[in-house]
Image 1: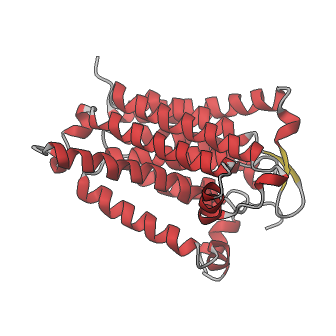
Image 2: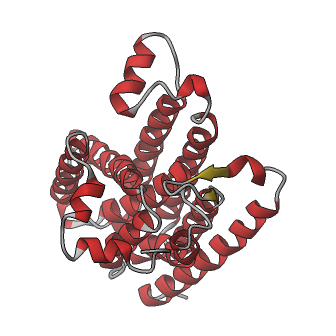
Image 3: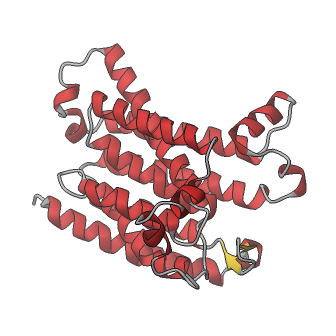
Length: 291
C-alpha cells in the first residue's frame, strides 16, 4: 500500500513531536542531567537536555516520513551524528582548556598548534555527516529523478553530492549561529521547515518541524536550551530536506546564501541586526519569558 505524502507528513510531525517530548523527559530523569545544566545569557540556570531530545525526536520523525529507505537513513545519519558531536562540544567545550579557542578560525588555529579542540571534532563530524547524508540521497530514486539530475555524468554526480553535503553541514552551522536567545533557533527552524513540507520529500522536514514545535514552549520559558547538539541536528535535518528537493542549481544557490550569511556572522551580530529590525525584533521576542 502506497502512503500518500500528506499522510507521511502528518505521521512524521506526530512522531517528531511525541518522541522529542518523551526523549526530553528521559534525559531529565537520567543520572547525566546535572552535567547538562548551564547558565544562560540572563543568568538563569537551564538544561541542555532539549538538544539530544530534539536530535532523537527530529531524526526519527524525519526517517518515518522519508520517501524511501536511503532518504530515511540520510536523515538518521545527519540528525543523530550532528546531535552527537554537538553534544560532545556542549559537554567538553565548557572545560577551561577548551574555552581559549573561539569560532571557526580559533579552532583551526588550535589545530595548527597540535591541539584537537571539541570544536574541531564537531566541525569534522558535521562535515562527515553531511557528506554521508548527501551520498545516501544520491541513491534515493525520489531524489535522483529530479530534472536537474537526469543524465548527469559521474563528475556531475560527485559535484552534486558535494553541494548536498555543503547544504547539510552549512545549514547545521547556520542554525547553531542563531541559537543565542531563547526560542530563536527553534523559530528559525519552523520558518525554514514550513516551505519544505509540500511535495514527496516533505516528510523529511516534518520530523524536525514537529520536534521543534514540541520543544519551543520550554525553550521560550528558559527551562531548556538546545545547545550545539539540538541546533546542529535541527539545521542538518532541514538541510537534508532542502537538499532532497533541489537539483544541482538549487543546491548551489542555497549553499551560496548559507555561505554569505555565515560570512556575515563573522562581521556583524545577528542579535543586533534582529534587535534593530522592526518585525524581526517582535517575532524574535514573541512568547519569550520577560520579553
